[in-house]
Length: 268
Image (cartoon, rainbow, N blue to C red; front, side, top):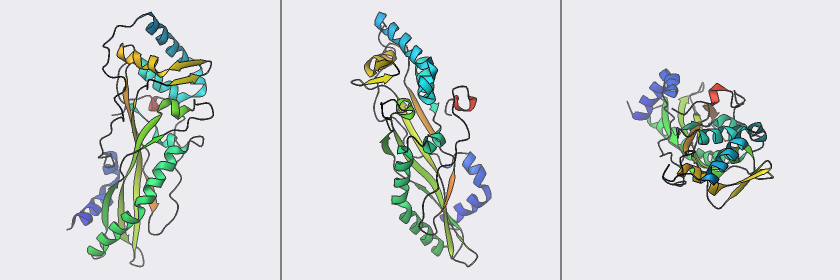
């Protein structure tokens, strides 16, 4: 049995188990685009550093960054200093009506690859003599920057800033009722980045303006610690038999507040 046919048999019989086991985990290396502030805890903090830490804690706990829940949650994690990887709620990132950058970038990437994926599936289907086939697909990682908002303090911009994203999926071709191949894809959107602060910028948050250099120094003095962020959307399906619009992202199942246990866990 050829590889695409064997994959199809596994996919048909064990799809849920394969997805739960992380079949769609990206194969590309998920690392931040820059090195951040450098080595951790190599300088001793001074009076100004302790003052900055008090300010940062005050900003984070003042009204959840004035309603910016994810920005507050990520700063909390930075100030907590564990350095552990944090899970990104990609479903909520994709469905945010105030920030469509991730949705637009990931959709455009899939559209560019759609014809190629369909062709591969149809060729494998023909070679199999009409037996079901399954082909894993993955786009290259591309960088993007979240919408800053009118005042430069939008939620996902403060929480993530710039990040990398790609799409992973499985394209299947099976015989329809009329014997003609039906092509479908099950896919997810993946996002990853490193939470750090870039010297040379300043960010207005409410009545306070913090410099990225001051925030980055807290990593150097051990008062806070940079960390990796990564996450994947729920798996979505699309009929690729003919051209058509990709589906809208599913509605998020959680409100994403810092008191929501499901959104406070580290990525595994």
